[in-house]
Amino acid sequence: MHGETKTRKEGEMKELDLTEMKNSKSGTIVKILGGRGMRTRVGALGIRVGCKIEKVSEHIMRGPVVVKVGATRAAIGYGMAKKIIVSLE
Image (cartoon, rainbow, N blue to C red; front, side, top):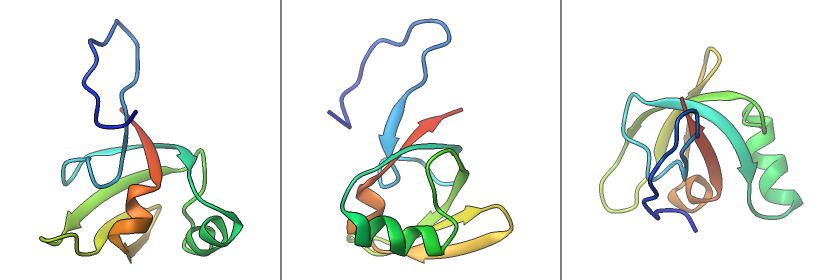
């Protein structure tokens, strides 16, 4: 599902999770996997489906991923970042 490389057609967006994005890249959140608790936690940080998100940095060895949503920066755990699916711009 994610991580698969597909040949992109003109105008087709590429979807991947936050851990697969390169630093300083941005996109639009298209899906948040997980239950209500997961969506509530990331929603409190302003991370919602349809929002623009930028990956600022990540730490090695499955450490936290730092993202920017609007004017807010937040560090989220690797497991949570793996469940946030983004369409690259």
